[in-house]
Each structure stands twice: as C-alpha cells, then as structure tokens.
Length: 388
Image (cartoon, rainbow, N blue to C red; front, side, top):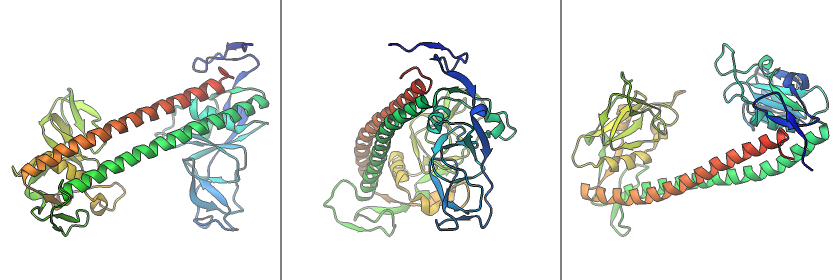
C-alpha cells in the first residue's frame, strides 16, 4: 500500500508522509557552543583525570582528553561544525567534550539523534549572516527546518541508514585507498625512471643526492639553475579566456594576458605547492606559482617536469604556517641529467605510463563522485520519508 504524502510547505523538503510535521531545530534540541581550551584541563593521554575524548571539527577526536570536572556532553547528542566546513554533523553516543568550533545539539525530548544527524549533515544547506566569515552560531542554527515524526520511525530510518551508509562508506574508503595507491605507483615509476633510466643492466654510480640515489654512470648531476630560468608570477590586469594558475591542482580563473608555453609551473606557496604542472600552450601564473623556462637547450622541459614531481619538498619547504618555496630553493635543487636524446626517450615512456594510470584514477574518481551522490540521495529520500 502506497504511503499517503502531503506538501511539507518547504520547497527544498518537498512532500513528506501524512502524520509527519515540519518543525525547527530549536524546538527539538538545546544548542550550545563548545568550550574554550584551557591549560590544565586537557591531556594528550587518556587517564583517570582526563577520561573523555575531545572533538574538534571532524568525525574523529583530536587525540586530546578532557578533565573529569568539566561540563561534559553526553550520549545521544550531535556535534555540528560551526566554523570551517559548516554544517558537518556527527552523532555522538559517549561522554565527551567539544571545542568552540562545534555546536552541540542535545535533545529536549525523546529523539533518535542519529536520524537528525543524517538530516543536518545531508539535507540542510546552511547560510551564515555572521560578521565572522564562515561561522554558524548556536542562535543561527535554531530556525532551520527538520521533520518531526514518531520515535519508532526515526529509529527504523536511522537503523536502515546506519547499515546502508556504512556499506557505501566502506566502498568509498576502499576507492580512496585505490586512488592513493595509483598515485603512489605513478610517483614510484617516475622516480625510478628519472633517476635510473630505462636500462636495468647499466652500470651505476652514487649521485650524492639522497632522493636520487644511484644514477647511470654516464649521467651527470646538475643544479636546476644552470639549465632553467625560474621566474615570478603576477596578478593579471585584463579579462579573457587564458587559464590562470597558482600553486593549486588546476587553473582557478581566466584572464586576457598570456605567456607562451611550454613551461613548468611550480608552487611558491600554499598547501599544494608540491604539485607541478606542465603547460604546453598559453597560460598565466599568479605570484603563488613560479614558471620555469628553458635556459639550456640540453634540457627538455617535460623531463624537468617529471623531476619536479619527485623533488623532496619536505626538505626545502620553509617552516612557517603557510608552506613556501623560494627561487633559490628550486634553483639549487640537483637533478639527474642525461643527454637530451635519452631525456626524450624517458619522457615518451613516462607519458604513456602516466597517462594509463591517470585514466584509471579518473575512473575511480568518477566512481567516488557517483557513490557520494548516491549516498546523499539515499539519505535525503529516507529522512524526508519519500522512501520507506
């Protein structure tokens, strides 16, 4: 027998089952902000004085434990990220402490908080009007719409979603591990090829550079500044369709100015500065990325690019809050240097190998996107009662 549905009166919720009501978070939950961290109240080890885990803005605890006499939050509650990735919600069924980045939702009546954690995390789109950018306050969360339904139905929906979402999350985790394995395999192939060449039986010698190790005996080791020129980027002044790069995984906007490739873009600052790009066309780079151009005809820029993939960035990155590199750092990096003809053979080999692995990664990333979309759709359909 088909379930009788009715209009919820809220456009983004749509129809809900007869017998359900639309209410708001403030009617069902008491909402409090997490506390401030204070010296002496926390420990990085669990013991009798500090037995309770402390949560920040993720699904995992922060590996810190709270003092017993603190106001501790209890079971069947929800933590919601109030700063950063706003609106991420996690069900908590233990005693714990939460820091100020989190909002804690405690039921005012008999509720299954698992059901509402699914709702908040996947259905609600939060907006903030706080003066602080990207901040959701306890007061701001109260009016957001959720459904009110019998406890037994909440429980059944939460039980079903725990099982199904757990299965999907398991596949997602496995897919992510596979993608990381492919990336590690790709990097291992690149490192082995640019440092050893393609002849496994050739005589070798010590390079004297840790990340390079032994190289073919007829190769040289050379500083990058002797064969390439590393120049600064700048902000573009006109609009257009030329891709603009920083130290990110891809171009982030377009402009009207351009430089002509080929070039290799290497990061100057930012969390993704370790990801170089080979550009064979028109481009522009802002000041978070350097561009590398050929200075010596003996270097093939695509070969330099494959070396840049292998650089030991941890050794050179400045010890600051924002990771950064300098032209001097890059210029003084040693690279293994075969004759240009051999570089061309190496590049051709690596292009084929890497393209094959990249295609596998793209397929896995498409699967990941499909799984995330399916998971979100599944949760939406069940928590709003469109499916039973």
